[in-house]
Structures are given as structure tokens and as C-alpha cells.
Image 1 (cartoon, rainbow, N blue to C red):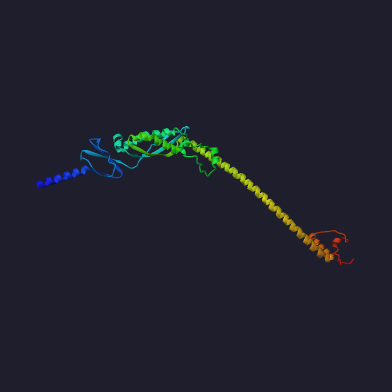
Image 2: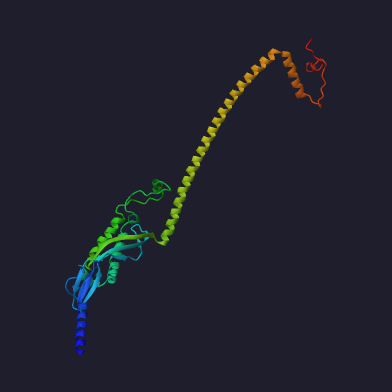
Length: 314
């Protein structure tokens, strides 16, 4: 029994030794092996199974994939003395794990180095160019639907882009990369995440934008009022033309009708003039006399000839 216990103990020690001597590197990792704090051999960057001295050698793992860096937003003045709020970010990776281990030791230390190198580079380039260079990339015309681009340029000229944001971010990366190479770091990309005016400038900019929009709105209203007056004038002119034409047409129709009526009357009255005189006199009686009318006329008056028993003979 005692012999079996010894055997079991030896087996456990061997298993423990083997487990401590084996380590695995996967596709997203790279490993630096150290002995008493000093790196030994080359870093293991190829995925696979590796061996080390247990309890003596130590493995330090570093990521192989892209890592994030998010800068602290801050106020930076541009070349034209406009203070803006700038927020940047970057992507980086460890390309030399041994140099990385010997200099910054870990990811947290590397982030501090990135802060010390990228932030000054951002400030240096932002302060070296006017605001328009940081805001825009090209001189492409803005798609402004409230007013034409010419109107906007007259009110608030933006200036001409000569460098652009893309070149500025490229310059930031070119300036920072050589300083990071000695830490085994490759800077993959740097971008400006957010730009904005500082609070004091923002209020004045908003007021200017409101004034510009009011000016554009008033311009549109003025043009609209002028167009309305033109439409109203055209409408009045057209109405007068139509009314005049209709009146002329009506008068022509009435004239023709009167002519026809006169002709008909003449033909009718020509057939019996005495009957026409009698009918016409009765119409006059009807229109001029009623029960309250009083007339004093001579008996010789032609007006009452039909009331005196006129027989048509003299």
C-alpha cells in the first residue's frame, strides 16, 4: 500500500509538471515567455502547442487583433482662432510583442502612451489649419434645400478647402506612428469622431444661423409677395378681357335681337296700323292711369279718342 501511494504521488507530480510545461497560443494571441522577469527566446506568434519550464518560466499573453483607443475630448483653437470641441479615436495593434513587453508591459500602459502621443499630434494639426479644413474634406457643393448654394455663400462664405480633414487625419497618423514604433505598436488608423463648437461660440453661431435663416425666409416671402402681385395682376387683366369680350358679345346679340324684333314689329304693325295704335294706346292707359289718377284734359285730346267711342271714322 505504501508503495502504491508513492507511485500515485509520482504520477501526480509528473502530471502537474506536464501541465505546467504546456501552454497554448490561439489565433488571436501572441506570447512572450519570461524567466525570472527576463524575456527568453522569440515571442510565440504562431498558433499551436508550446512547452516551457514549469514554475520557472512565465507566459505573458498579448492580443494580436486590432485594439481601440478613444481620446479624451477637449477644446482646441483652430488657426482662425475658433475654439472647437474635438473628439478622436484610433485603432492600433501590437506588432512586436517583445518590444511591447519591455517598454509598456501591458495594454493599459500602451493606452497611456497613445494618449501622450496622439493627443498632442491632434492638437498640433487642428491648430495649424482653419476651421473649414477640419470640418470638410473637399469643396463639393453642400446639398442645401432651403436655399440655393449661391445664396448661402453670399450670407455665410465657408472659404475654400485646400487640405481637408482626410489629409489632416493622415498627417496625425504619420506624426504619431514613428513615436509608437519603438513600443512595438502599429497605428492602423486615426479618425475624428466628433467636432463641435465650444458652448460660448455655439450660442453665437446658433444666433447667426437663425439670422441667416430669417434673412433667407424674408427673401422667399418677398419673392412670394411679388409673384402673388403678378398673378393677381394677370388675373385682373384676364377677367377684364373676358368681361369685355362677354359684354361686346352680349351687345352684339342684343343688337341683332333688337333689329329682328323691330323688323317683326314693323311687319306686324304694317299690316294694320290702326290696330297697332289702339293696342299701343291701351298700354299707355294701363301704365299711366289707375283708380287714384286724376287728369283734366280737353275733349279734343287725342289721348282719349278711344274712350269717346272712336269707331275709326272721322
